[in-house]
Every structure is written in C-alpha cells, then in structure tokens.
Image (cartoon, rainbow, N blue to C red; front, side):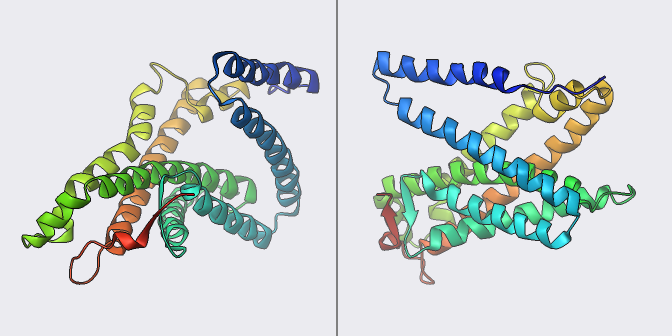
Amino acid sequence: MNSLIFSTTELLLASGLIVASAGLSLLLSLSIHRQLLISGVRMVVQLLLVGLVLRFIFESGSPWLTLALLIAMLTAASYEVGARQKWRLSGGWHFALSGVAVSTATILVAGFALSTLASTSDWTAPRVVIPIAGIVLGTAMSATSVALNALLDGISSARNGIEAQLALGRTRNEAMRPMLRKAIHAGTIPVINQMAGAGIITLPGIMSGQILAGQDPLTAAQSQIFLMFLLSGAAIASIVIAVWLAILRLTDDRHRLRLDRLKPHS
C-alpha cells in the first residue's frame, strides 16, 4: 500500500479550518484569532523549511549536520519552555535551567532508545536519530513548561506560607513539597492521559502514521508502545530536573526564599 501524499489543494482546503476558527474567534470575541493565524503560518513555514533541511541531511548522511540540527532543536526547546510563562527566573537562569532539564532528559532517553535499536543496520542514520530525538524533546519541552509554570506560580502565591515554614526550621524541600508535588503532577498529566487513552480513545501519532503508510497494525502498535514508554520517561526526568533546579535557584544555602530571583514575564 502506498503512503498518503497530500496535494497543495488538499492542504489549502485543510487550512480553511484554521481560518474558520479565527473567524469564530472574531465572532465570539475570544481574542485568539491572531494567535491562531500567526501560529498556523509559522507552522507551515517551519515544517516546509525543516522538510527541506531534513531531505538534505538524510541524503548527505553527515553526522555533523545531524549534530548541528540536534543542538539547534535543543536550543529552541530551551527558549520555548519559558516563552509563554507567567513567571521567569531572572538573569537568564530560566533558559539555562530549561536547557539543562530538557537536554539531559532528551539525551538520556533518546540514547537509550537508539541503543535498543543497535541491532539494526541503520540505527545511527539521521533519518532514525533525528525523529526519535525530536519526539522525545517535544514531550520533555511541553512537560517541563507546564511543570515550571505551576511551580513558579505556586511559589509566588504561597510566599508567606513558605517563609513561615522556613522560619520554623523547615528545609526548603519540606517547605516547598506541596508546590513541587503539584508541579510534577501538572507536568505529567498530558503524557499519562496519552498512555491511558491510547488505543481506546485515540490512535497516537506514530501508530496512525505507520498504518497510513501501510504498516501492519500490530507492528505499528508495538512501535507506539515503545515510544510511549520513552515519552513518559523523558517527561518525568525533565520535570524532576527542572523543578529541583528551580527550587535550588529560588533559595540560598541558608534555606531562605529568594523571590528577588523571580520576575514576571513582561
């Protein structure tokens, strides 16, 4: 069976859904039409450019070009983690912290995934390395963004309670444990929902893509199971690293709260 190939006309027809959604936003005064249209245009440009870049890299097979692209992806993900959050760590720490979290989780989990494929002849090929790293990175980025947003907002709102507990001799980990738990819970909800609903409510992306490309459904299901385990591991690892580093940054060695290191996102 041949894989599906969409023509320009079909893509334009599909884009009408975004235009209709923007029109509905205007009609109902939802104020999301601008974001919808800009995001839609940005997505089209980005994906087409990435498609051209990936075609060139796949044809060249260069490990250095692959590495350069992965570094660019990690850098962009580090920025996106804090791009739309209410609070940020000052002095560039937010992006540094995000970069450490998502990069560490992505490298570890993607490395584990590739090591399990070492028996295949093309496991180091760019067309294998880049998609796996990209999928893992996307999940780590989203989970970290949600968790950090919940953590920083919670710490800012509960400042008096945290300082009172610290004054009573509690450690920073003890005083901030409720916010830490809420942040980790918030960050893991999407990937948990994905796993819980996979197969019953939805056919996840990889499985659907392989089925549309003519792959046996059972084989596609096995690929999706493998991927979901990777994504859950990446999400949790990235979240834990990010919230732990954020708590360390927002306190000092005497376990005092340092909200002067936190600033609202302008």
